[in-house]
Image (cartoon, rainbow, N blue to C red; front, side, top):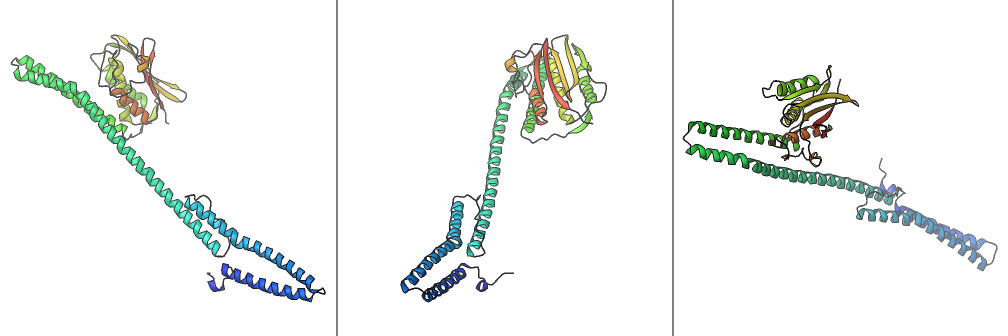
Length: 358
C-alpha cells in the first residue's frame, strides 16, 4: 500500500527538519547541562564548546551519508548515462527521494539499453539487407556478363549459318546449315538453363530436399544409363561397390545431377580404350565415392580452379560449358560434404564423401 507523502518520515525534507529539531534540542539541552555543572563559567563553556564540535562532526558525517554520498552516486550514474554507458546502475537504495530518483534512473537506463539494443539489431539487419542487395546485384551483373560472353560464339555461328541458309540453293547444304543452327540453339538453351540453375543454388533461391534412399542402387542406375547403355562406349568399365544397401539422406535429384556431371566429365576425358573405374568404399564412418578415368593429368595449379564457373582446361581434349563441375561443387558445398580431385598414376580421380543413415 502506498504511504501518503505527508505521513512518510523518510523524505529528505522530513529528515532535515527532524535532524534540525534534534540538533536544536541537543544544543539547548547541552547548554543547560553545562551551566549546571559544578565548575566555573569558563570551564562549562569549554565543555559545551567541545560538545558542539562533536555534534557538528556527527552532523557532518550524517549529512555525508544521507545527502552528499547519494548525490555523488546519482551524479555518477547521470554522467555514465550521458556517455551512453548503462552497465553501472545507481546503487542508492534508500527509501527517500534519492532512492526513488535512483530507481527512476536505473529504469531509464534499462529502457535506453533496450532501445539501443533494438536499434543496433535494426541497423545490423539493415546492413545485412544492403549487403544482400549488393550481392544480388553483383550476381545479376555476373550472370549477364557470363551470358553475354558465352552467347557470342553460338550466336555468331547461328548468324553465319542463317545468312548462308538464305543464299544457299543446294538442299543438302541447307539441311546441314539447319542442323547446325538447331544444334547451337539447343546448346544455348542448355547453357542458359544450367547457368540459371547454378545461380539459383548460389543465391539460395533453390533449397535442397533431403530424402532417405539406397545410394548403391541409385549409383548403379545412374552409371548404367550413362556408361553401359551407350553405343559409343570406348572404355573399360571397372567398379567396386558394396553388395549391401548404403542408405543416405540427401537431395536425390541434385545428387543425380552431381553423378551425371562427374561421370560425363570422366567419360569425355578418358583416353580411347582406357579404364573408367567407379568405387564406393567405407572409411572412418563415411562412404567415399570415387570415379577414375585414364587420361592426361590436371595441372596442379588448376586443381582448385576446375570447380569455378566457366573454367576450361586448355590441355583437355574436351571443352564443355565450364558449369558442370561448378554445379557439383555448389551442391556438395551446400551439404557440407568433402569433395575434390587428384591426379593418380595414369589418370585423374574425382571424389566426395557421404555420411550414412540407418
